[in-house]
Amino acid sequence: MEISESIQCPYCGQAFEIVVDTSAAFQRFTTDCEICCRPFEVVAECEPGEVLSLEVQSG
Image 1 (cartoon, rainbow, N blue to C red):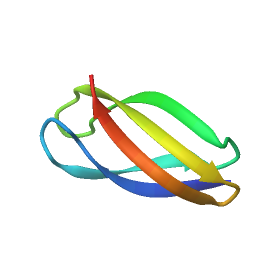
Image 2 (image 1 turned 60 degrees about the vertical axis):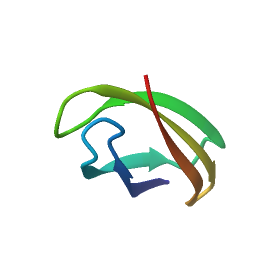
Image 3 (image 1 turned 30 degrees about the vertical axis):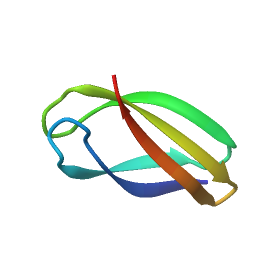
């Protein structure tokens, strides 16, 4: 199950939505900010249908 979550870019500070697939318990992936286009890492811990924690890490 995919869930939309709001995150904040560690570079420009703007908030935007990402989609997290909660079928995987632990995820680490890189995404680009929709505003400033800089890449950063997202770490998510999930249970099916629920995001337990979401952390943004600058590269």
